Length: 227
Image 1 (cartoon, rainbow, N blue to C red):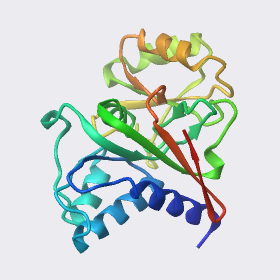
Image 2: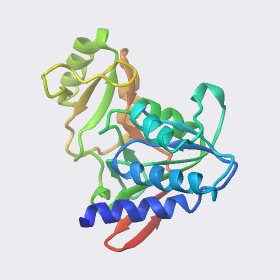
Image 3: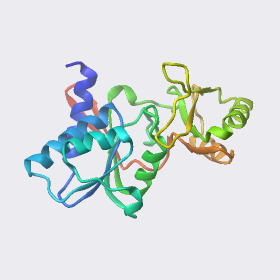
């Protein structure tokens, strides 16, 4: 098993220690969240976790959780979530995040905002001093894509339309497009997020600010917890 996979798995298992019977859980999307869902599913099947319900952040996550028989809810069914476990593409010392590399940023942010606690799990490579080396995903309504692309280009965000292998535009589970903004270094994430939200046609951004309760990071064979 590679070092990165070991780190992801160790972080996931540490986070799952906070899952308790009776909770409504948010289940994230991506390669690190996969290990958390696997651990929760195994405990559910073994009967050591009971009376849990889960809200998946993507169709892929829903499929994985269903394979273990975990009861699923829609976000519209609840007004709060006890605990969410999800991954991140980057996090900084203030626990600000970039998410959306897997394309599920809108649902992930809805679930994160509804959660009493949000645990971010990652390998050591995701820790950065400044956000922005990872391209910032921005979810956009298809009918507004040309407009938003022009505006973001004028604002020097260097947006690139995410595409599938066949060259067609990548579609989110919400049937929207994603522009990946190549920013290099984000000096003021809060200001950038506000600016982006003021552009009509932008559904959501991959900046997750003030949402993470803890970031749990696998570092070699160890696990480090950032509060």
